[in-house]
Image (tube, rainbow, N blue to C red; front, side, top):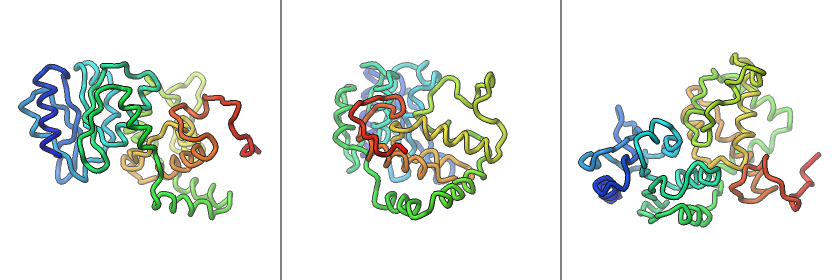
Length: 262
């Protein structure tokens, strides 16, 4: 697999089809970091193993990356889902990117255009694992008050570093709500109300858009289980609205269920 990725990267760069290949490379210690390859001879620095889980799609909307030229990206399933969602949100046009797709069985997937990306994503819908469902089940056994206290306790650790936002490919707004101060929508200090406001606002903005890559939890320096919060919404969206690329809170369907409204 690793050799095939390197070969594909060399071909794309040598032919001039892309200007940069975004993949995984060795970092410090045993960690993996994002790697930006611009020369064919550097393709051998690309790696692919069980450590390569970062959602590289977060770099595709960065102006620094777009300034280099057309990118190719090494894309596991969560990256493919991210690209599909970003395409739906009109962040990419046909021909803007090239994708070196990697299946869950670690095979190269041919995804030559945005249509094929959409079809592949549709054929591999986001489904929570048994372990993830079990974690959600623990929340379901709590009373409303217990769940509230659980999240208040977890979110009280937040230091408002916004690493969750920086690591998320769906947080690409040029100006975030937390940076708007006229009027001030979200309290700036890291205290109980400000933390709850920030994380609930962000979770609602991700409703129906989150690809469950887990970057928010991995990036959090105080280990808040933000992925669990998003998974709860993923489960609710699936039950009440079904699988869709649409931002759930901005879409209207007259056939939507209404029995969940109280």
